[in-house]
Image (cartoon, rainbow, N blue to C red; front, side, top):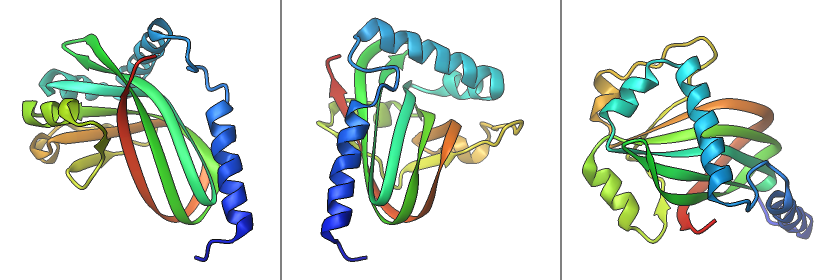
Amino acid sequence: MTLTRRNVTFALGATALLGACANGIGSSGPARIDARVDATLSQLYSQYPATRDLEAKSAGMLVMPLVTEVGLGLGGGYGRGSLRINGATVDYYSVAKASGGLQIGGQQYSHVLFFMTNEALQTFRRSGGYAAGANILYATPERGETLAAETTTQLAPVIAVIFGQSGLRVGATLEGVKYSRIIP
């Protein structure tokens, strides 16, 4: 794919739109983020009861109630959430995504990162910006499917559960994801 002025202009415009979109979280502070996280976890546990086992076995979890992505050639995404350890919020984080390739569309979804080992959790917390990599097992359950926390999920240091998707974004892309601690 070649970068044209049109693609760059669109990508910059999409990024500005994404940053300005009223996705319900905005910068209203910790109370609003925590309320969204509580609602997201309630939805996750009611739709996929086996995720309660993941929570019980995890050292902590990062909950992103709403991630919004857009793309046309170049794309991006953003969301805010909180890190919870033993059910209590200890920090707030943002997720920023960038992608390039053959893509078009927009989507929103929720996701939760379950840190299955203390080492994985400490690595996440100590880093200045955590880039998701190959050490994460992704689980994208369809409606009505059971998400099992069995053998393969117990071996992964970090498990990402993506759910509540809406919208449509299609294509083949290379993506980068970065999680950063924020002060809401």
